[in-house]
Image (cartoon, rainbow, N blue to C red):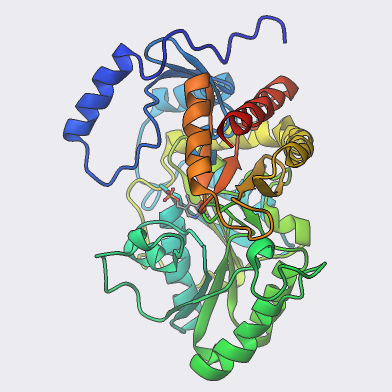
Length: 443
Ligand SMILES: *Cc1c(COP(=O)(O)O)cnc(C)c1O
Protein backbone atom coordinates (compact mmCIF):
# COMPACT_ATOMS: atom_id res chain seq x y z
CA UNK A 1 0.00 0.00 0.00
CA UNK A 2 1.35 3.42 -0.92
CA UNK A 3 2.89 5.32 1.95
CA UNK A 4 3.09 2.37 4.33
CA UNK A 5 6.10 2.96 6.55
CA UNK A 6 6.49 -0.46 8.12
CA UNK A 7 8.21 -2.86 8.29
CA UNK A 8 11.24 -0.56 8.26
CA UNK A 9 14.59 -1.67 9.67
CA UNK A 10 17.06 1.25 9.83
CA UNK A 11 19.51 -0.29 12.30
CA UNK A 12 19.80 -4.05 12.85
CA UNK A 13 17.85 -4.78 16.04
CA UNK A 14 18.77 -4.60 18.82
CA UNK A 15 20.26 -1.19 18.03
CA UNK A 16 22.31 0.82 20.54
CA UNK A 17 19.33 2.26 22.43
CA UNK A 18 17.72 -1.15 22.65
CA UNK A 19 20.94 -2.81 23.82
CA UNK A 20 21.31 -0.37 26.71
CA UNK A 21 17.78 -1.09 27.95
CA UNK A 22 18.13 -4.84 27.47
CA UNK A 23 21.29 -4.83 29.54
CA UNK A 24 19.70 -2.80 32.34
CA UNK A 25 16.64 -5.05 32.30
CA UNK A 26 18.83 -8.15 32.57
CA UNK A 27 20.50 -6.68 35.65
CA UNK A 28 17.33 -5.96 37.58
CA UNK A 29 14.31 -7.96 36.47
CA UNK A 30 13.48 -11.30 37.99
CA UNK A 31 15.01 -14.34 36.39
CA UNK A 32 11.77 -16.04 35.31
CA UNK A 33 11.11 -13.79 32.30
CA UNK A 34 11.61 -15.46 28.92
CA UNK A 35 12.22 -12.46 26.61
CA UNK A 36 11.65 -14.06 23.23
CA UNK A 37 13.82 -11.58 21.33
CA UNK A 38 15.36 -8.17 22.03
CA UNK A 39 12.40 -6.02 20.98
CA UNK A 40 12.44 -2.79 23.00
CA UNK A 41 9.24 -0.87 22.33
CA UNK A 42 8.98 2.89 22.17
CA UNK A 43 5.46 3.22 20.76
CA UNK A 44 2.85 1.53 18.64
CA UNK A 45 0.00 2.42 16.35
CA UNK A 46 -2.44 -0.04 14.84
CA UNK A 47 -0.49 -3.11 13.73
CA UNK A 48 2.84 -1.22 13.81
CA UNK A 49 5.32 -1.28 16.68
CA UNK A 50 8.31 1.07 16.74
CA UNK A 51 11.41 0.29 18.76
CA UNK A 52 13.70 2.72 20.59
CA UNK A 53 16.07 2.88 17.60
CA UNK A 54 13.38 3.88 15.11
CA UNK A 55 12.83 0.44 13.58
CA UNK A 56 9.23 -0.27 12.66
CA UNK A 57 7.77 -3.75 12.88
CA UNK A 58 4.59 -5.37 11.67
CA UNK A 59 3.08 -6.88 14.82
CA UNK A 60 1.71 -10.34 14.19
CA UNK A 61 1.55 -11.39 17.85
CA UNK A 62 -0.21 -8.41 19.51
CA UNK A 63 1.64 -8.89 22.78
CA UNK A 64 0.25 -12.45 23.03
CA UNK A 65 -3.12 -11.76 21.41
CA UNK A 66 -3.84 -8.84 23.73
CA UNK A 67 -3.61 -5.65 21.65
CA UNK A 68 -6.89 -6.54 19.96
CA UNK A 69 -7.81 -3.11 18.60
CA UNK A 70 -4.22 -2.38 17.59
CA UNK A 71 -1.74 -0.34 19.56
CA UNK A 72 -3.11 2.76 21.25
CA UNK A 73 -6.34 2.89 19.31
CA UNK A 74 -7.45 6.54 19.56
CA UNK A 75 -10.94 5.61 20.75
CA UNK A 76 -9.62 3.36 23.48
CA UNK A 77 -7.09 5.97 24.56
CA UNK A 78 -9.76 8.71 24.59
CA UNK A 79 -12.13 6.57 26.67
CA UNK A 80 -9.36 5.86 29.16
CA UNK A 81 -8.30 9.50 29.35
CA UNK A 82 -11.87 10.57 30.01
CA UNK A 83 -12.24 7.95 32.76
CA UNK A 84 -8.81 8.70 34.27
CA UNK A 85 -9.65 12.38 34.49
CA UNK A 86 -12.62 11.60 36.72
CA UNK A 87 -11.27 8.96 39.16
CA UNK A 88 -8.69 6.17 39.07
CA UNK A 89 -9.99 3.87 41.73
CA UNK A 90 -12.70 3.31 44.28
CA UNK A 91 -12.86 -0.53 44.50
CA UNK A 92 -15.67 -2.18 42.61
CA UNK A 93 -15.92 -4.87 45.27
CA UNK A 94 -17.19 -2.38 47.80
CA UNK A 95 -18.72 0.53 45.86
CA UNK A 96 -20.46 1.36 42.59
CA UNK A 97 -19.65 3.10 39.32
CA UNK A 98 -21.39 3.08 35.98
CA UNK A 99 -18.57 1.58 33.90
CA UNK A 100 -18.48 -1.56 36.03
CA UNK A 101 -22.24 -2.10 35.84
CA UNK A 102 -22.18 -1.34 32.10
CA UNK A 103 -19.31 -3.74 31.36
CA UNK A 104 -20.81 -6.57 33.41
CA UNK A 105 -24.18 -6.13 31.73
CA UNK A 106 -22.56 -6.03 28.31
CA UNK A 107 -20.48 -9.17 28.85
CA UNK A 108 -23.41 -11.04 30.37
CA UNK A 109 -25.52 -10.23 27.31
CA UNK A 110 -22.72 -11.11 24.88
CA UNK A 111 -21.96 -14.51 26.40
CA UNK A 112 -23.32 -17.44 24.39
CA UNK A 113 -26.65 -19.00 25.36
CA UNK A 114 -29.96 -17.66 26.50
CA UNK A 115 -29.71 -18.07 30.27
CA UNK A 116 -29.09 -15.04 32.46
CA UNK A 117 -25.43 -14.51 33.41
CA UNK A 118 -23.48 -12.62 36.07
CA UNK A 119 -19.95 -11.26 35.79
CA UNK A 120 -16.95 -11.08 38.11
CA UNK A 121 -14.16 -8.76 36.92
CA UNK A 122 -10.47 -9.58 37.42
CA UNK A 123 -7.04 -8.16 36.57
CA UNK A 124 -5.89 -11.08 34.44
CA UNK A 125 -6.75 -14.35 32.79
CA UNK A 126 -5.22 -16.32 35.62
CA UNK A 127 -7.46 -14.59 38.13
CA UNK A 128 -10.51 -15.39 36.02
CA UNK A 129 -9.46 -19.06 36.03
CA UNK A 130 -8.90 -18.92 39.77
CA UNK A 131 -12.38 -17.44 40.27
CA UNK A 132 -13.84 -20.22 38.12
CA UNK A 133 -12.14 -22.93 40.20
CA UNK A 134 -13.56 -21.43 43.37
CA UNK A 135 -17.07 -20.79 42.05
CA UNK A 136 -17.29 -24.27 40.49
CA UNK A 137 -16.29 -25.88 43.77
CA UNK A 138 -18.60 -23.65 45.76
CA UNK A 139 -21.62 -24.13 43.51
CA UNK A 140 -21.29 -27.91 43.17
CA UNK A 141 -19.72 -28.72 46.55
CA UNK A 142 -17.48 -31.06 44.59
CA UNK A 143 -13.69 -30.86 44.45
CA UNK A 144 -12.27 -32.51 41.33
CA UNK A 145 -11.46 -30.63 38.15
CA UNK A 146 -10.74 -32.17 34.77
CA UNK A 147 -8.46 -30.31 32.37
CA UNK A 148 -6.73 -31.17 29.11
CA UNK A 149 -3.17 -32.06 28.23
CA UNK A 150 -1.51 -29.17 26.50
CA UNK A 151 -3.81 -26.70 28.24
CA UNK A 152 -2.67 -23.33 29.49
CA UNK A 153 -4.77 -21.66 32.17
CA UNK A 154 -2.29 -19.38 33.92
CA UNK A 155 0.34 -19.22 36.60
CA UNK A 156 -1.13 -18.86 40.07
CA UNK A 157 -0.97 -22.06 42.07
CA UNK A 158 -4.54 -23.13 41.29
CA UNK A 159 -4.49 -22.09 37.63
CA UNK A 160 -1.04 -23.54 36.99
CA UNK A 161 -2.24 -26.89 38.30
CA UNK A 162 -4.78 -26.91 35.47
CA UNK A 163 -2.02 -25.93 33.05
CA UNK A 164 -0.32 -28.86 31.33
CA UNK A 165 1.72 -27.20 28.69
CA UNK A 166 5.37 -27.26 29.82
CA UNK A 167 6.87 -29.19 32.77
CA UNK A 168 8.91 -26.13 33.73
CA UNK A 169 5.68 -24.35 34.66
CA UNK A 170 5.21 -26.91 37.48
CA UNK A 171 8.81 -27.80 38.40
CA UNK A 172 9.72 -26.93 41.96
CA UNK A 173 6.33 -25.41 42.82
CA UNK A 174 4.56 -28.41 44.31
CA UNK A 175 2.49 -29.58 45.95
CA UNK A 176 -0.04 -28.16 43.53
CA UNK A 177 -3.83 -28.21 43.86
CA UNK A 178 -5.07 -31.73 44.65
CA UNK A 179 -7.75 -33.52 42.64
CA UNK A 180 -6.93 -32.12 39.19
CA UNK A 181 -7.01 -34.68 36.37
CA UNK A 182 -5.61 -34.21 32.88
CA UNK A 183 -7.02 -36.02 29.86
CA UNK A 184 -5.95 -35.95 26.19
CA UNK A 185 -7.20 -33.05 24.06
CA UNK A 186 -8.68 -33.44 20.59
CA UNK A 187 -5.43 -32.51 18.88
CA UNK A 188 -6.32 -33.92 15.47
CA UNK A 189 -2.82 -33.71 14.01
CA UNK A 190 -1.32 -35.72 16.88
CA UNK A 191 -4.28 -37.60 18.31
CA UNK A 192 -3.72 -41.17 19.57
CA UNK A 193 -7.28 -42.04 18.65
CA UNK A 194 -7.92 -40.55 15.26
CA UNK A 195 -5.01 -38.59 13.79
CA UNK A 196 -5.15 -40.69 10.63
CA UNK A 197 -8.96 -40.94 10.45
CA UNK A 198 -10.87 -38.69 8.07
CA UNK A 199 -12.91 -37.22 10.92
CA UNK A 200 -12.61 -36.93 14.68
CA UNK A 201 -14.19 -39.94 16.41
CA UNK A 202 -14.08 -38.22 19.82
CA UNK A 203 -12.24 -41.20 21.25
CA UNK A 204 -10.51 -38.90 23.71
CA UNK A 205 -13.88 -37.83 25.10
CA UNK A 206 -15.02 -41.44 25.36
CA UNK A 207 -11.99 -42.22 27.54
CA UNK A 208 -13.11 -39.63 30.06
CA UNK A 209 -16.27 -41.64 30.56
CA UNK A 210 -14.86 -45.12 30.00
CA UNK A 211 -11.46 -44.84 31.66
CA UNK A 212 -11.27 -41.87 34.00
CA UNK A 213 -14.84 -41.98 35.30
CA UNK A 214 -14.99 -45.75 35.67
CA UNK A 215 -11.52 -46.50 37.04
CA UNK A 216 -10.12 -43.43 38.80
CA UNK A 217 -12.58 -40.73 39.55
CA UNK A 218 -16.28 -40.85 40.29
CA UNK A 219 -18.01 -38.21 38.16
CA UNK A 220 -20.11 -37.14 41.14
CA UNK A 221 -16.88 -35.78 42.64
CA UNK A 222 -16.14 -33.61 39.59
CA UNK A 223 -16.94 -29.91 39.88
CA UNK A 224 -15.87 -28.81 36.43
CA UNK A 225 -14.28 -29.64 33.12
CA UNK A 226 -12.25 -26.70 31.86
CA UNK A 227 -11.43 -26.41 28.16
CA UNK A 228 -9.94 -23.91 25.72
CA UNK A 229 -12.11 -24.01 22.56
CA UNK A 230 -8.85 -23.43 20.73
CA UNK A 231 -5.78 -24.37 22.74
CA UNK A 232 -3.57 -21.29 22.75
CA UNK A 233 -0.16 -21.74 24.36
CA UNK A 234 -0.47 -25.46 23.58
CA UNK A 235 -0.11 -24.76 19.86
CA UNK A 236 -3.17 -23.02 18.41
CA UNK A 237 -5.22 -26.20 18.22
CA UNK A 238 -8.96 -25.84 17.58
CA UNK A 239 -11.17 -28.43 19.25
CA UNK A 240 -12.56 -30.57 16.40
CA UNK A 241 -16.14 -29.96 15.22
CA UNK A 242 -18.62 -31.55 17.62
CA UNK A 243 -16.07 -31.76 20.41
CA UNK A 244 -17.46 -29.02 22.64
CA UNK A 245 -21.07 -30.23 22.22
CA UNK A 246 -19.88 -33.73 23.24
CA UNK A 247 -18.21 -32.26 26.33
CA UNK A 248 -21.38 -30.31 27.08
CA UNK A 249 -23.38 -33.55 26.98
CA UNK A 250 -20.87 -35.35 29.17
CA UNK A 251 -21.08 -32.54 31.73
CA UNK A 252 -24.88 -32.53 31.65
CA UNK A 253 -25.00 -36.28 32.21
CA UNK A 254 -23.03 -35.94 35.43
CA UNK A 255 -23.96 -32.51 36.78
CA UNK A 256 -20.47 -31.20 35.99
CA UNK A 257 -19.94 -27.54 35.12
CA UNK A 258 -18.38 -26.77 31.75
CA UNK A 259 -15.85 -23.95 31.94
CA UNK A 260 -14.73 -22.43 28.63
CA UNK A 261 -11.41 -20.65 29.00
CA UNK A 262 -11.72 -18.05 26.25
CA UNK A 263 -8.97 -15.87 27.66
CA UNK A 264 -7.14 -16.07 24.33
CA UNK A 265 -9.95 -16.98 21.92
CA UNK A 266 -12.51 -14.46 23.17
CA UNK A 267 -13.56 -10.95 22.19
CA UNK A 268 -13.73 -11.27 18.42
CA UNK A 269 -10.36 -12.82 17.59
CA UNK A 270 -11.86 -15.90 15.95
CA UNK A 271 -14.37 -13.90 13.93
CA UNK A 272 -17.07 -14.48 16.52
CA UNK A 273 -17.30 -12.81 19.91
CA UNK A 274 -16.60 -16.14 21.62
CA UNK A 275 -15.26 -19.31 20.01
CA UNK A 276 -17.95 -21.47 21.71
CA UNK A 277 -20.44 -19.89 19.33
CA UNK A 278 -19.06 -21.90 16.41
CA UNK A 279 -20.52 -25.00 18.06
CA UNK A 280 -23.53 -23.28 19.64
CA UNK A 281 -22.35 -24.38 23.06
CA UNK A 282 -23.34 -22.52 26.20
CA UNK A 283 -20.72 -23.04 28.90
CA UNK A 284 -21.68 -22.66 32.56
CA UNK A 285 -18.69 -20.41 33.08
CA UNK A 286 -16.88 -18.45 30.38
CA UNK A 287 -13.55 -16.69 30.95
CA UNK A 288 -12.22 -13.73 28.99
CA UNK A 289 -9.22 -11.49 29.45
CA UNK A 290 -6.42 -11.01 26.94
CA UNK A 291 -8.07 -8.97 24.18
CA UNK A 292 -10.80 -7.52 26.38
CA UNK A 293 -9.03 -4.32 27.39
CA UNK A 294 -6.88 -3.79 24.28
CA UNK A 295 -3.85 -4.15 26.57
CA UNK A 296 -5.24 -2.87 29.85
CA UNK A 297 -5.31 -5.51 32.59
CA UNK A 298 -8.88 -6.73 32.83
CA UNK A 299 -10.47 -10.15 32.80
CA UNK A 300 -13.92 -11.53 33.39
CA UNK A 301 -15.60 -14.62 34.71
CA UNK A 302 -19.07 -14.83 33.20
CA UNK A 303 -21.24 -17.42 34.92
CA UNK A 304 -24.82 -18.57 34.63
CA UNK A 305 -26.90 -16.86 37.26
CA UNK A 306 -28.25 -20.20 38.47
CA UNK A 307 -24.78 -21.34 39.62
CA UNK A 308 -23.62 -17.94 40.86
CA UNK A 309 -24.55 -18.78 44.41
CA UNK A 310 -21.55 -17.51 46.38
CA UNK A 311 -22.47 -14.90 48.99
CA UNK A 312 -21.05 -11.38 49.52
CA UNK A 313 -17.47 -11.52 50.78
CA UNK A 314 -16.79 -15.06 49.53
CA UNK A 315 -14.57 -13.76 46.74
CA UNK A 316 -13.24 -10.36 45.71
CA UNK A 317 -10.47 -8.18 44.31
CA UNK A 318 -9.11 -4.75 45.21
CA UNK A 319 -8.28 -3.73 41.66
CA UNK A 320 -10.49 -6.03 39.56
CA UNK A 321 -12.74 -4.01 37.27
CA UNK A 322 -10.70 -0.84 37.67
CA UNK A 323 -12.71 2.05 36.15
CA UNK A 324 -10.04 2.99 33.58
CA UNK A 325 -9.77 -0.65 32.54
CA UNK A 326 -13.57 -0.90 32.30
CA UNK A 327 -13.56 2.17 30.02
CA UNK A 328 -10.90 0.52 27.85
CA UNK A 329 -12.94 -2.69 27.70
CA UNK A 330 -16.18 -0.90 26.78
CA UNK A 331 -14.39 1.01 23.99
CA UNK A 332 -12.78 -2.23 22.85
CA UNK A 333 -16.16 -3.98 22.65
CA UNK A 334 -17.57 -1.03 20.66
CA UNK A 335 -14.77 -1.41 18.14
CA UNK A 336 -14.92 -5.21 18.02
CA UNK A 337 -18.68 -5.21 17.46
CA UNK A 338 -18.42 -2.19 15.19
CA UNK A 339 -16.33 -3.93 12.53
CA UNK A 340 -13.16 -5.52 13.90
CA UNK A 341 -14.78 -8.89 14.47
CA UNK A 342 -15.94 -8.93 10.84
CA UNK A 343 -12.46 -7.84 9.79
CA UNK A 344 -10.95 -10.68 11.83
CA UNK A 345 -13.16 -13.17 9.98
CA UNK A 346 -12.26 -11.70 6.58
CA UNK A 347 -8.55 -11.31 7.20
CA UNK A 348 -8.49 -14.69 8.91
CA UNK A 349 -9.73 -16.33 5.71
CA UNK A 350 -7.00 -14.63 3.74
CA UNK A 351 -4.42 -15.69 6.32
CA UNK A 352 -5.60 -19.32 6.40
CA UNK A 353 -5.71 -19.52 2.61
CA UNK A 354 -2.26 -17.96 2.29
CA UNK A 355 -0.71 -20.13 4.99
CA UNK A 356 -2.29 -23.27 3.52
CA UNK A 357 -0.88 -22.21 0.13
CA UNK A 358 2.60 -22.11 1.66
CA UNK A 359 2.28 -25.84 2.40
CA UNK A 360 2.79 -26.53 -1.29
CA UNK A 361 6.12 -24.72 -1.26
CA UNK A 362 7.40 -25.85 2.13
CA UNK A 363 7.30 -29.48 3.19
CA UNK A 364 8.29 -28.38 6.70
CA UNK A 365 4.73 -27.09 7.21
CA UNK A 366 2.85 -30.07 8.58
CA UNK A 367 -0.46 -28.48 9.51
CA UNK A 368 -2.28 -25.15 9.19
CA UNK A 369 -5.30 -24.61 11.41
CA UNK A 370 -7.30 -22.01 13.24
CA UNK A 371 -10.20 -19.62 13.11
CA UNK A 372 -10.22 -15.95 12.28
CA UNK A 373 -7.02 -14.24 13.35
CA UNK A 374 -5.91 -17.16 15.49
CA UNK A 375 -3.97 -19.34 13.09
CA UNK A 376 -1.32 -21.96 13.85
CA UNK A 377 1.29 -23.14 11.37
CA UNK A 378 2.90 -26.30 12.72
CA UNK A 379 6.46 -26.98 11.56
CA UNK A 380 7.76 -30.54 11.25
CA UNK A 381 11.03 -32.21 10.26
CA UNK A 382 9.21 -34.67 8.07
CA UNK A 383 5.57 -34.81 7.02
CA UNK A 384 5.51 -38.59 7.32
CA UNK A 385 6.82 -38.78 10.91
CA UNK A 386 5.34 -35.40 11.97
CA UNK A 387 8.37 -34.85 14.19
CA UNK A 388 8.13 -31.29 15.59
CA UNK A 389 10.77 -28.92 14.20
CA UNK A 390 11.37 -26.62 17.18
CA UNK A 391 14.71 -25.26 15.95
CA UNK A 392 13.15 -24.18 12.68
CA UNK A 393 10.40 -22.35 14.58
CA UNK A 394 12.98 -20.56 16.74
CA UNK A 395 15.02 -19.64 13.66
CA UNK A 396 11.97 -18.30 11.84
CA UNK A 397 10.83 -16.13 14.75
CA UNK A 398 14.34 -14.67 15.22
CA UNK A 399 14.93 -14.02 11.54
CA UNK A 400 11.53 -12.41 11.03
CA UNK A 401 12.19 -10.11 13.99
CA UNK A 402 15.46 -8.96 12.44
CA UNK A 403 13.61 -8.26 9.20
CA UNK A 404 10.73 -6.38 10.77
CA UNK A 405 7.88 -8.80 11.56
CA UNK A 406 6.95 -9.83 15.12
CA UNK A 407 5.90 -13.45 15.56
CA UNK A 408 5.65 -15.83 18.50
CA UNK A 409 5.65 -19.58 18.74
CA UNK A 410 3.16 -21.80 20.57
CA UNK A 411 3.44 -25.42 21.64
CA UNK A 412 6.54 -27.29 20.52
CA UNK A 413 6.83 -26.11 16.96
CA UNK A 414 3.83 -24.04 15.94
CA UNK A 415 4.06 -20.53 14.58
CA UNK A 416 1.23 -18.57 16.19
CA UNK A 417 -0.40 -15.93 14.01
CA UNK A 418 -2.37 -13.57 16.24
CA UNK A 419 -2.15 -10.02 14.94
CA UNK A 420 -4.24 -7.11 16.18
CA UNK A 421 -7.74 -7.34 14.69
CA UNK A 422 -7.12 -4.15 12.68
CA UNK A 423 -4.76 -5.75 10.13
CA UNK A 424 -5.54 -5.28 6.45
CA UNK A 425 -4.70 -7.24 3.29
CA UNK A 426 -1.24 -5.67 3.02
CA UNK A 427 -0.38 -6.64 6.60
CA UNK A 428 -1.54 -10.21 6.06
CA UNK A 429 0.37 -10.54 2.80
CA UNK A 430 3.50 -9.03 4.37
CA UNK A 431 3.41 -11.60 7.17
CA UNK A 432 2.85 -14.45 4.70
CA UNK A 433 5.76 -13.28 2.53
CA UNK A 434 7.97 -13.12 5.59
CA UNK A 435 7.10 -16.71 6.54
CA UNK A 436 7.72 -17.82 2.97
CA UNK A 437 11.09 -16.04 2.74
CA UNK A 438 12.30 -17.21 6.15
CA UNK A 439 11.39 -20.84 5.47
CA UNK A 440 13.06 -20.65 2.06
CA UNK A 441 16.27 -19.44 3.71
CA UNK A 442 16.19 -21.66 6.78
CA UNK A 443 14.90 -25.03 5.67
C1 LIG B 1 -2.93 -16.24 28.76
C2 LIG B 1 -3.93 -17.22 29.20
C3 LIG B 1 -4.29 -17.34 30.55
C4 LIG B 1 -3.61 -16.55 31.64
O1 LIG B 1 -3.84 -15.18 31.48
P1 LIG B 1 -2.91 -14.11 32.25
O2 LIG B 1 -3.58 -12.81 31.92
O3 LIG B 1 -1.54 -14.26 31.71
O4 LIG B 1 -2.98 -14.40 33.68
C5 LIG B 1 -5.29 -18.23 30.87
N1 LIG B 1 -5.91 -18.97 29.92
C6 LIG B 1 -5.59 -18.88 28.62
C7 LIG B 1 -6.33 -19.70 27.62
C8 LIG B 1 -4.58 -18.01 28.21
O5 LIG B 1 -4.25 -17.94 26.92
